Length: 170
Image 1: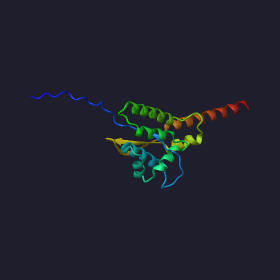
Image 2: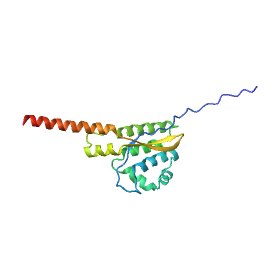
Image 3: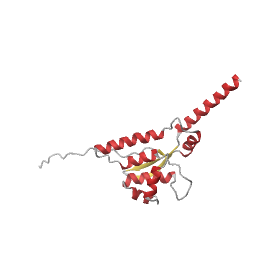
Image 4: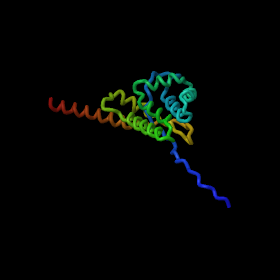
């Protein structure tokens, strides 16, 4: 009977799960960067790890993808982009992945300076998440942003109670 020396095993990398993100606000165009197209781009980016191939898969250009990433309000989109491209088999890649994950989570929570119109848009459009299955892009999941709804309701409730107090003292 032959005896073979045990082979060192690589540590198993857990499957990639991308967090949801708020789509970058753009003009309403059928051939533009719609929220679904943005999420599909992220999914193909995680699958191919190539910006050109992912942009081509959603019938857009690489240059327009980089322009979209630089727009105001694209913090969550850019963070999920960085997560999709981070190599998780090296220590530096894991650190980059963790940093991008923290930035993506921070971009989801509305700040105190967000207007009611922006909160209404965030709740109305929701969050988009590219779902991967066995390392391949499978579908896009849309989740409503209940946190934005609760912040909106709290602000409206505060303003109504302030108006009631002013009427009582007048």
